[in-house]
Image (cartoon, rainbow, N blue to C red; front, side, top):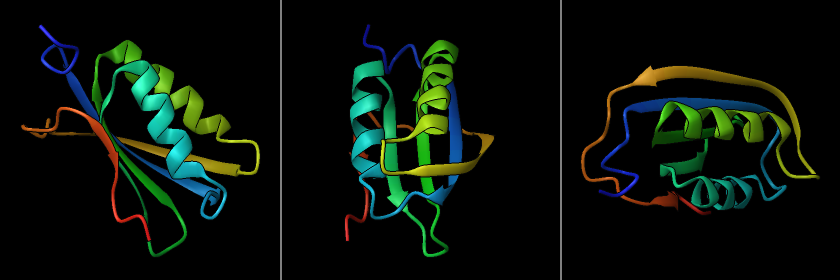
Length: 99
């Protein structure tokens, strides 16, 4: 059984602050791979970064901690978190809309 098959929760995070143009999406992608989380990360038009993450409670807790820190050049002011429904078919983590 893969870590994705054991995924019990899906969370949506919206990270606000200086989080665009500082490598934040690549930071999230790397951390998600390390933690074994599936989902995606993308920039939003309002300057925030949005993350959909699927994994165990421990995996999501680890990601939450890393999102609050961010990469060195970022400044995280707030991390909003909400539970969402598991999205079938998501088996890896990717950057969406890399513009």
